[in-house]
Image (cartoon, rainbow, N blue to C red; front, side, top):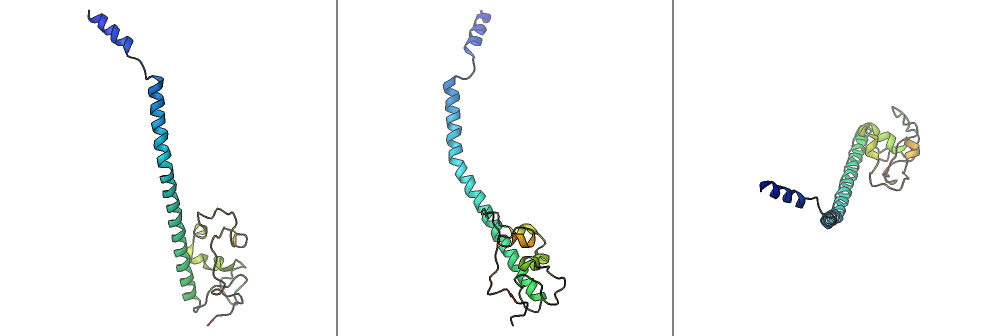
Length: 143
């Protein structure tokens, strides 16, 4: 008698039905549709934070540069008279690079334009620009 019950239970025990699988797939799709925008916002916030950190590093680099160079800002390209080492025409980014020591800090992750301010001049992408009222263009101190 036990054998008949076991055989009957075995016949009734089968895999998931198609409807059950479709319901599970639909629930997963709904959850994914809800969560993907949340993940995109988190990723964008992380990019903004990286950009802000890079700008802080640029600000600190400019401050250190001016303290080391008699309170004068970098020049906008060309060679500064008597500057050691010469910048070889790399502009302000090349002059503050020794204070940053990372080419990645010059590139904002949100810069999706593919064009960079002075990437062709420095050899690495530069997403940020320096205020021309601040940096010199003639190699002479402002003060």
